[in-house]
Every structure is written in structure tokens, then in C-alpha cells.
Amino acid sequence: MPYDYDDQNIFAKILRGEIPNDTVMETEHSLAFRDITPQAPVHVLVIPKGPYVCHDHFAAQASDAEIVDFMRLTARICATEGISPGEGGEGFRVIGNAGEHALQEVPHYHLHILGGRNLGALLEKQ
Ligand code: 5GP
Image 1: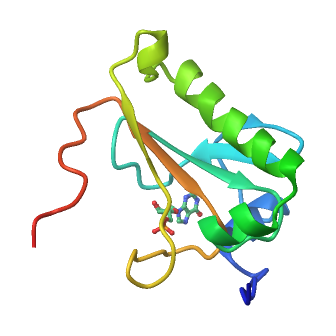
Image 2: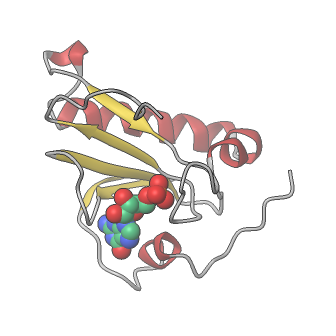
């Protein structure tokens, strides 16, 4: 898959410690931190530490260990942030933007975990 990773993106700089972040949780292969412009009371970004551009790049190229670590971390965030319906929370949405049509701003794979309020419809009607 011909993805070209730009190591000057803002999340790469966060991973290298060049830019501060509000870390929620860190694991061997992944980092979760609060979005600088939160769209909901809970807005956490989860990123792999490896150089992946977006969802299909990560899902196709990352090791099993990276993928499991990343997915388990998203579950732990939902639980600890109190938004998991399985833990008595009121629900959440996970969003992964990729490329131009999704208006991906930062070309390092990330999932947005959003919750803490009613999030409305998935997409605006055109
Ligand atoms: P995208 O549109 O790429 O899916 O979302 C990128 C997200 O990264 C946006 O929600 C934006 O607010 C967030 N963001 C951009 N720069 C920074 C930063 O320097 N620190 C943090 N914590 N979040 C950032």
C-alpha cells in the first residue's frame, strides 16, 4: 500500500516529546491524549507509536501486537472516562478520518473517542 509517512506531522512531534500533550494513558505501542480542541466533554485521541498514516494503512501494515495494543487501549479509555455502556456509561463514538474527503488534518493515524454528551447524527444531511 503506497502510503508515504511524513515524520514532521504534529503527532510525530508529540511522540518524540518535541510538543507537550495531555496524556491520558500510554502503552508499549500506543499513546492516548486529550484533543487540544475538544468537541465533547470527553475527546481523547488514540495513536499508534508506529509510522502509520490512517486506518487502512495501520490495519494492513501494523503487527498483531500493535493492533491488539491499540484496540485494547481504546477500550480502557472508554472505561476509565466513564463513557462505556458496558460499564454503566452513556455511550461514545469512535471516529477515524482518512484523507481529503474525511478532512483528515494530521497524517498520523488516530482515533477520536468522543463522549460525555449526546453526539447527534453521525453525518450532516447534505
Ligand atoms: P483529524 O481531522 O486529523 O481527524 O483530527 C486531528 C485532531 O487533532 C483535531 O481534532 C485537532 O484538534 C487535534 N490536534 C491538532 N493539533 C493538536 C495538538 O498539537 N495537540 C493535540 N492534543 N491535539 C491536536
